[in-house]
Image (tube, rainbow, N blue to C red):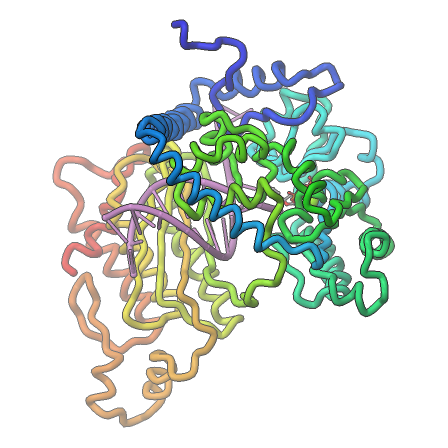
Length: 527
DNA sequence: GCGGATCAC
DNA sequence: TATGGTGATCCGC
Ligand SMILES: Nc1ccn([C@H]2C[C@H](O)[C@@H](COP(=O)(O)OP(=O)(O)OP(=O)(O)O)O2)c(=O)n1
Ligand SMILES: [Mg+2]
């Protein structure tokens, strides 16, 4: 009723694009959001999205209640939190360092740039890299129509009839990515990166060593790095120069496309720049936190400082400090402890919703094999296996298990994954399934299966050794020696036999209505 | 350790 | 007709 602001409000998708200026190509923001909305409405995706928005809004409401309750406690309470906030801000200010230089470099419309470089005919056309179901990125011409990363291709097509789609060539992007990383290493061997197309470089030492540790030198170095990239790859890059990693990243965004931006190493000017900044630009503020903050009346960084009492009450201390630091332009400016080792490996796939257990089983088997191969390459083992899925309603579910031992073999992973899948007891169709392994150790010496293999080759194994690698089939309880081949064959046979035995009496297996979980359920019924 | 959420690319 | 894949982290239990 009166509460509804018909035209002004978000039309129902958290990812509707709300920032940036209106497009100049005949499509304004309202028109774009209407097309997105009209295409999405009445889909399971949209329904799920709305539920999600409702949850976020509810969370924001309860935050607001907490705020008004707290603020009505009286002046003593206000004085108290004022004190605490003041302390935190003092602490933040004590962490403000203006002597370290960070240069963040990020390729412009990376995948699209590579494709356009290799096919110059695309240069003056709106281009999307991706397919009908998903766009990975779009060039700047397409972006003027509202087309952007993570937008489904069919919506992109509606926004711009002439949009040209290019299938992604990931190996090419990896190659180009490696080229720019080589360059980054020259300026900061410990540079940080969140993706193929970017690097956050702490260049303080480089600047000092080359006697250019001043504002001009800082900006000159950014130009040099971008030029090196251009020479080596023929691809455009943008850069941001600032006194900490977070600000440098924000600066890159201000410099785009094909440009760079320098944030002065000066407290007042930093605060001035940040005050107008939309909170969504803060690295770490995604669409959910943005929406939550918006609900609390916080849109820009200035609002964060203005509503510091409210935010202090609403958020946990750590989150409050994070927001306040960002608003003040203070961020960490030394490298984190080096984390080189990958902590998890995952594979997943989306497909037309299905309850066909054979198909799902095939994916899980394939993922297990591929993950096992990757572990072989890394000479690694894992202790944790997870299975994840999305129902046809886009509801994610997952189940994981940490074992008392390390494994790496395809079949070991597969077995656990199938067990976990069955334990999820999914009755609906699903549209997505994945397998993930974690708790990786990068060695195999002393691995249980190493010992097993050695013992297996021993012509006269001791009884006690046999015990350690004998295995019981969970289906038929038969005990047998472990070898991959035998296990595989045995399992397959057992599964087939059992799936027939456990065929439900009345319902017969039909082509169009396969009974999910029968095969796999029975596999574990006896365990 | 587990499961769900969030974020980044 | 139709909304991705990979890796990381954090929180509350
Ligand atoms: N949701 C996303 C975001 C990005 N990417 C891929 C495609 C991008 O080309 C690449 C780099 O991501 P960026 O966020 O840097 O975006 P772009 O480089 O495409 O554009 P920009 O000029 O804004 O940096 O990662 C993706 O697959 N899915
Ligand atoms: Mg980029």
